[in-house]
Image 1 (cartoon, rainbow, N blue to C red):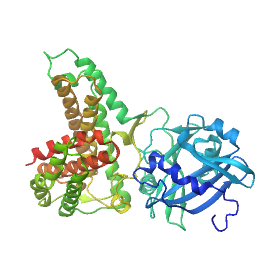
Image 2 (image 1 turned 135 degrees about the vertical axis):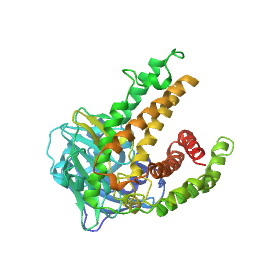
Image 3 (image 1 turned 180 degrees about the horizontal axis):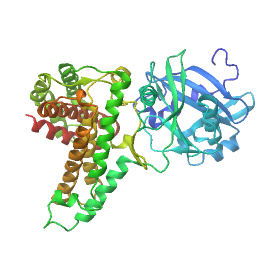
Image 4 (image 1 turned 120 degrees about the vertical axis):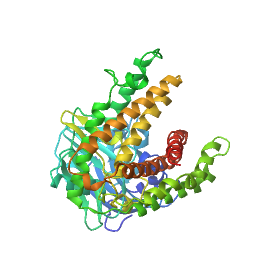
Length: 469
């Protein structure tokens, strides 16, 4: 029971451990049977359905939980088919009830949006398939993101979205409200314009790859793979080019909003080296029978990257450093009628907040998008029932074409020249270094979350390092 919260539902705290362990956004923290402490709580709606806001310490981190409370019959109807949202039986001032994740309750979502974000509406629908947070859409007009893992300090998504809006960058959804607890130094929720009718970049890319592979089925003579990629229906490169132009504008706007500082290629090389060494140290967690080749690759990483990182350290004019997106890939951009928009500035979720807020080279974002084209091609191969050398070459040609189109348009944009090396050779080294860093991060992420996918970034990492030996 929290001091000062006499109506805090009895029994709620004891159910939180099992509830948290079922949530995708809880990720690697393991608290089944472990200590869970409610740090702070606020009653946002008193009468049934009631709504509680909780700040919970568990698994070594702090989490935001919205709790709905209804009578058992009403809760049973609401939770039908949503077992993961159940918290458990409780008792409050109105008697026995059932507690659950309030983000599955449209009525309570509307109440939360109105009270904490000044967003009024009449209809709510959830946004599925999220890994780290929970979002819902109000009236197909505003999307509200509830940050689940709460870290002290400015949340990069809120910080960058507001800063870019101030300098007039209009390729991100316009902020519509945010909730911050200044006394705790935490950001808790963000509301932004909902891009109705927009299509995620990843979905568009995968559709392009499916079209290409269908077009190329049975065509193993005649046009080359590179020529076939450019045929109508399969050519994604115009969109990749427009995407490159948008990202260049993004970096120019970030430089304006946050300022620029001197490049530190030696420091960047050191961080990449540390990432590779940390990944190599994880070899003990890789099954030697099922993952022998992967284990061998991990052990060899620091030595294999030595030549590339030494070249990176030696770059004389590496451009500038500024704030960047930090986790840029095809799943973080959306194509709408007005063009490409960039989403989700929280950065790579498994990195500490200070790393996600650090200034670095815009080449980090460029490398992230280039890796995403390669990743999409590899996933297209994974999804096929039959993979042939020809289909694999088509997917590789697709990735090559879109990498070229993205880079060409990015480099053609004015306003960002001072952010990157002026010499093409230095630029290639810098981007390659950050591609290696991104692929290494991907290997670690997949080992933690989808071990059977780790071979995708591992193969890319091996190919990247072989190119720069």
